Image (cartoon, rainbow, N blue to C red; front, side, top):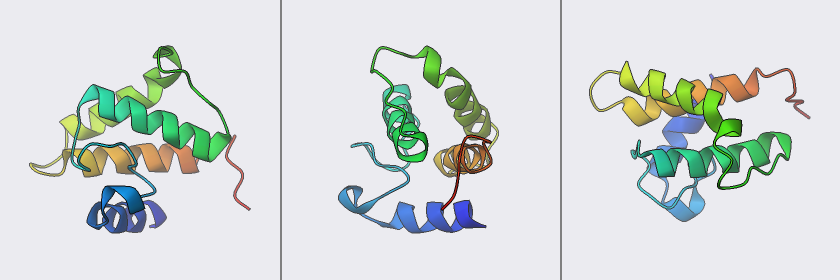
Length: 99
């Protein structure tokens, strides 16, 4: 429920106020560069793990998850479903500790 609420709220906000999808492009973007930039930001936010821009291997699993969810989404829902899948994966990761 948290991820669905977060995505719905985040999508309605201007880029500077978003907290789930923080890349500079439009929220609905599924372009690889935007996805990877946002994945780097989320990994830093969730795990304090800084991923270098040229380190695509560290993003491979989450990037594949985003792409699979986006590719199988209903029309117009690709980005939302991709970010929902990523959010759920990050929130349920054993490394994530919620305070």
